[in-house]
Amino acid sequence: MLFLAMAFFAPTLAGPADFDARRAEAQRLEASPEGAAYVREYSSLVTPAMRGCVPPGSSDASNIGTFSVVADVLGTGQLYAVDVKPKTRVATCFAGQIGRTTFPTPPTNGGKNYVVVIDMSITP
Image (cartoon, rainbow, N blue to C red; front, side, top):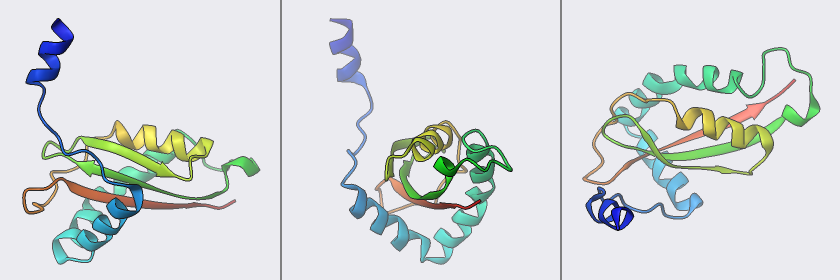
């Protein structure tokens, strides 16, 4: 009964669309002056999140590759609906680390959640 009550009073958040549509929305937002400025604001949060997954100087071949993370950013800076492709060990670790990070308050997006994409390329 308590679970039902909690679900009833929980805030309603828009469900995530598919990965590619969310990625395209994030890229559209990044193309605006406000979006580009926002990327500069949160970009310093990326490296510390990755360090928890791939330590500097790591030469393990399983740490190499590319992946993308998409996430909605709530007005509080909390990330919501964090998703990653492809779902490798390092990509999943990074998505978990960045998902616990508080981002700066995002620009407005016409009443919709603000979506970001982070493209990563890990090289030796």
